[in-house]
Length: 196
Image (cartoon, rainbow, N blue to C red):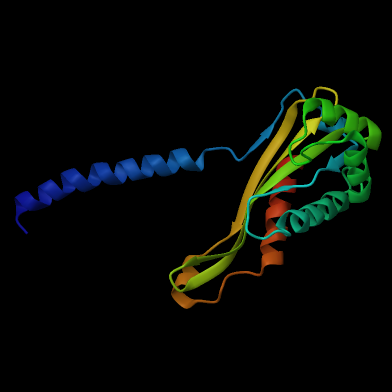
């Protein structure tokens, strides 16, 4: 290649690499959680976890993830978690139309009946196996939010994605990590974003 050709390549590739680096910096700084700065989270003693919305092909994903999340939240010792049966009875008594996205009025009525300081709602965006060519692996992606009873405001949100196909999976196969392992990792990540 001529000296002139090297000069042209440098003029093309250096700005392109700079642009890619800037995009990587911008996308890596997008926050994946929010805490209301005016909220005293230590005042929240009792939390109700609503049924999770499920955007996946696995009909049981919402209940599986909700159950695992409730257990992990309760075992943190930071809050009391209203049992799922009590939440279900409260939903029925109030007549909540869409338990995955209750209205402000339904939130207040339900929180009073089940004696909760706040409600957590959520959605499972991905759950199960993903494929790329001949390689497959498990993935989970979820987003949760907490709505405080008194203000009726969203005081915390967080999302987490775990699993997926790694470079190791592409090179050597192996199928990725088990579904329960990545589910627990995603939930630990979410709970860390709530308390820290």
